[in-house]
Length: 163
Image 1 (spheres, rainbow, N blue to C red):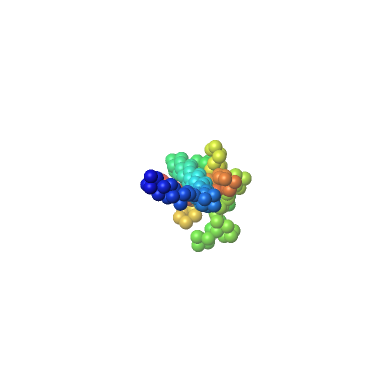
Image 2: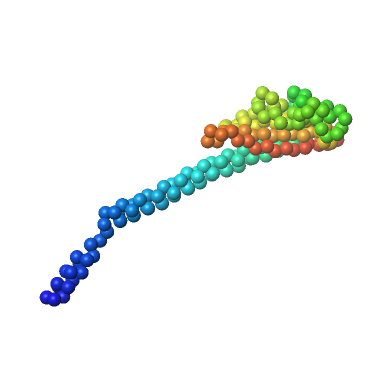
């Protein structure tokens, strides 16, 4: 009988969690879940950006491969707007018209050539005899939108005239 009374007294001392302790525990748990959620959102955005860069670079490399297979005088390797041809009359490696030999044109209206593949716009500009005579410098720019921001990848290739 005495054991029963002793155990009943101990049960009254062990009251469990109070409401305040429960609210604090739920708050701490909620803050942890919010932190995990924001990390997941950041991870998804980072993966989306990396995917865009990878695809943009792939399209640029693909275009480089297509262009280097063409004949030196192919129309796709022509400086159609003339801003990269004969711009270095004194052969000092500097564009005499103050530009970048037309290699920095990054819109479909100003680039020498362009094509659209899905969400990606591939532009390329050609400059003749820049750096070395009997070569064409081709600057390939791939532009796309990702999460409301315009992104781009640029590759440059010098194509020699093979005689």
